Length: 189
Image (cartoon, rainbow, N blue to C red):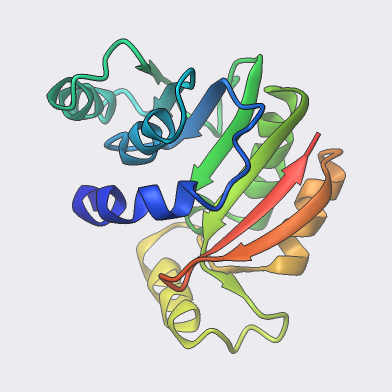
């Protein structure tokens, strides 16, 4: 997963407006590949990878290998149980919402919104389904994988993501598709 994320992260991050971004929270950031891409994208960005206690030691290894320990920190926690912190300009959730139930995502997006500074943005990067849930084809197959491999995971539609964002008082919601078959849904506080 690190190799794919490390390869794709610079292209995904380049699709985002980072002009007023100084602090990024990478929720469930795993190896830190996206956090490292944010740091490389523009001078002055600092990132925090928020992940489970059994993941963050591996995250720190990857960060140290890249020589970025001054710009990328790790925080241990469970996003379903713990507060995400505050004063972030961007909260990034890549390959996270498909692990959770609808209600867990609704609560998570609310937490993400609360962690933002005014004018900040929540960015969801995932497989986003058409409203009839039959396309894109890979997302349909991936939803079956989530059904089998998680307690309540699924792929979600743009309408569902927009609903979570609206209820979390995020607006000006935009969609950007990547060249990898994934989608970014961006909402601003």
